Length: 200
Image (cartoon, rainbow, N blue to C red):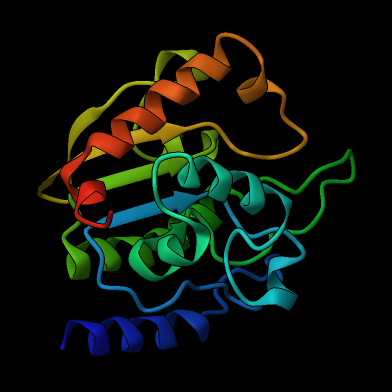
């Protein structure tokens, strides 16, 4: 029944066209009944063609991180619910990189994420990148949050939140100190979490 509800939710989500500046298609993960939600920022321009989240360079890095703590890409895609702050490609920033979604766009997409929390009742929330982290935690600098666990009430439900840096090739934060060590700490926290252990 839960899988059917997730499929129905994703069908409605894929039909969403609230944000005129966003570039469809809406990207969704597999309909996974998981106690782990991974929340990214927004799809890149390649994800639309490939039809799945984290399908390009950043995804390769992200799934290498997860392979280092016991789960390869296929297992993660079939056992972890992968969401995002925004589900459509925001388009390019004229100054380089992808455009950061507006507050209105983030708010429009938030209702889908809230519904996913209600459906899945997650125990572990993995936040990937500063935009995702900012939706749940007060953050000025990644060094203040990466490598730590935050127990937080999200829509009336206590969850463990573990922030990760964004695995973008454009960022050097996670390959230089202290980012490299903090990333390792964060991955160790995820690996030890009961919801992750249940998938090993």
